[in-house]
Length: 164
Image (cartoon, rainbow, N blue to C red):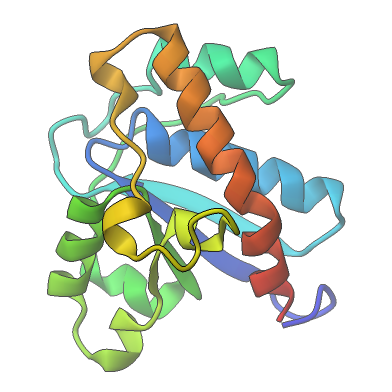
């Protein structure tokens, strides 16, 4: 896919869609925009626990600290129909990865599912069990910083993949 063609569509997925996946959504979208790529990024959760809720204030704060605004985010639950509408679906942890594979209607849809950190050269070949990002919701600001760092490390690989 080239920047001149239809936008490459990426979805990031975590549990409730208020911490990790919206962080990844806004971070990847910001990096793509900075590089001039035609990429559309959105996010969702594997559960309906947080549907309609805004991004966690701690996630919004770490994004804002890095100059990224996370306005107008409302959590939503992943819908299987979205397999057909996305080119790449990025799971933030292994339970999301497993849930997405279980929802995939066919092999082509399942092939779109990847661990986000499978694009991080430090763990790209480590296997899905070592590519997860722990849920920072249970922690403090430091845990959101760790999430930022782990997501950041994968972004160049994600963008290279989107370029084809």
